[in-house]
Length: 275
Image 1: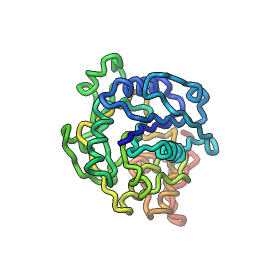
Image 2: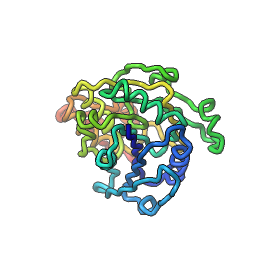
Image 3: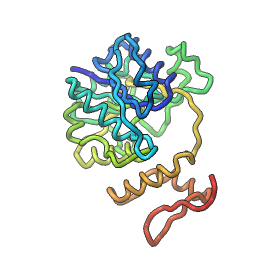
Image 4: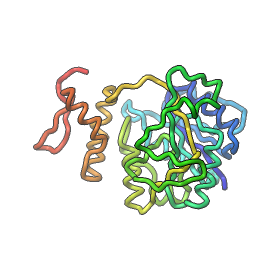
């Protein structure tokens, strides 16, 4: 089985370097490492020689917004063209555990028609990245997402799918049809992907031991800096599926009087309140 790890990136260069080094020292090094730079000249000039040496592609911004859906599709197309049987998508913020690629590969042999998800633990701000053996003991794993034991499988709910770390066979990728490219910027494109998979009869399977570790960076909750993207992408999602995603964030925005629900147009609209 030919395996490709695909990551999309804009900035976060130190995170990318740590991810690559972890793949270099992985127990099962992927055959291909596809890196898609979103308007990032530094990445297009990056040329490490340690295997897996990255194949670097580039896509432009879309009206100033990150084309996450398009970039993932471009990476998948390149991996399949190079002969990949298994596509492993890994967020640039994520460091794979030494067993992650191998766990996905083994699970895919049994569940080739499924959308495979791996647990992701969040590393704290003071993490010593030179001590990867300690990641598992210091990372925080969200309790509402499954975390099977190594070697175990848990068939899960599509609404818990996330794009931080997942794997899919090339054939199942074709069945789903990839990410919907009208999404741009932050939010909803992965929820749309999961709903599309569900409608296509593709189940979500959580793979024990396919852990990855999310590198620390400052965040805001709710993500007010992405408000414009969330409203645009949420509206697109609602037009496709009949309901709004990211409801928790929308509720929080509404409580802060940043958005309001317009009953006449059945949509959320931004208020005049300044962030």
